[in-house]
Amino acid sequence: MNRFHLWICRSVLWKAALRYRLLPRLLNNVNLGSDLIEVGPGPGLTTDILRKRFSRVTALEVDPVLAQKLKQRLRTTKVRVVQGDATAMPFKDNTFSGAVALTMLHHVPSSALQDRLLTEVYRVLQPGGTFAGTDNISNWLLTLIHLNDTLVAIDPATFSQRLQAAGFVGVKVTRTGRRFYFVATRPY
Image (cartoon, rainbow, N blue to C red):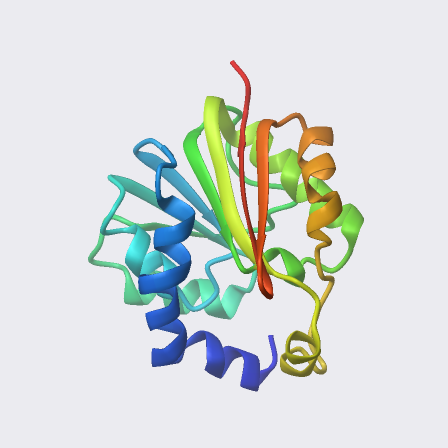
């Protein structure tokens, strides 16, 4: 993540957007259970919100520096921070009741690795578990923010099929402006 992008992801404006717009829209009427995995929390603004809503939160972050900073900052909370790759998660099958990926899928460096991440989320979810998330749709501002950074934008028109290919059912993908939201379930 480049410095400008990291600055945005730590900003008060982004925190307000998450707290009052993105997460309420995503989590409204979605049952993620009590044992949640957050894939790719970055600096952890989303984690701060999620830990107040769920009994147990595990934050899986690939960047060792961000993971260590998040672990240190949240050391007195019930959040478990794990440094690891979401395309090869260090968890047993059927571990979590719910999973979220919040504006992070476009950071995964290829479509094939994104699909591997979807398969891994499916694997670590319990039967009946829900996977929910949001991400940006490709546009000039997204491209500008990601200069010298990883950007593999997701096409919301084909994302439903990609989730289904990973095994998910009940897939809903909703586009709103420069963003899309998704919810999918691992079948029983």
